[in-house]
Image (tube, rainbow, N blue to C red):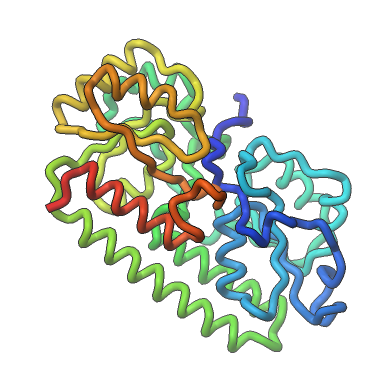
Length: 323
């Protein structure tokens, strides 16, 4: 199966301003106590970069491999990046998400390698919360597995509870790599987990009473979020948000929208909104943004993970008719 273009550019990847200069310099990235005395951390894409920055703070120098606006699956590493990855003290990545990164990590020889997929349980999610039109949806994308073995969904960071589990694992890895600052890493991890727990509560409370439980989105990135908060995700296209859904799938979604009182079709900041707008026009629905947080860019509805997640919550509340 074609594992490229599985994750839309909305960008799980990206990188905050810091990642924009990703790996342009390897000075001090090699060892703790290098030129700047900081732990050199290389993160494959934005959610892992954000965690490393929040936990490592002043003790780490974090480089992101995927620049803002670049689709993670389309990432090709330069020989220079590959070489610099091998000089990192710690590498954070999510196996099977970015083939180029998997290959480079396997050859890097780095001692502290953390695969985020091992820090929480990954699950399989289809394009449809109701299994409406599953055949059509599967015909488009071979089961929406985003290139993951066993058809698992990689978008774990969109569930604050699972993201907190990843944070704990990253914190433990930084402690191991740099025991001299273990107490700080532990404190920062606890702080981040506390903020994620509070965010989980905000989502729980904010989505408790809604007129509808179903939302339609161009890209099936929100399976974990939907499952966590008792919602039903209906994806127009499971794999590629810019692919043309079959007429049967579009017809099916029109029926779902009518049956489940759907008001809004969500699209992503960086992916094409063409199919969302087509469906919205055909069904008389509104459109809005639901960001899979694959990276932060100037067009993101917020400057970091928490701000964008709160924008997502607000947009969901509005679309679902929160009471």
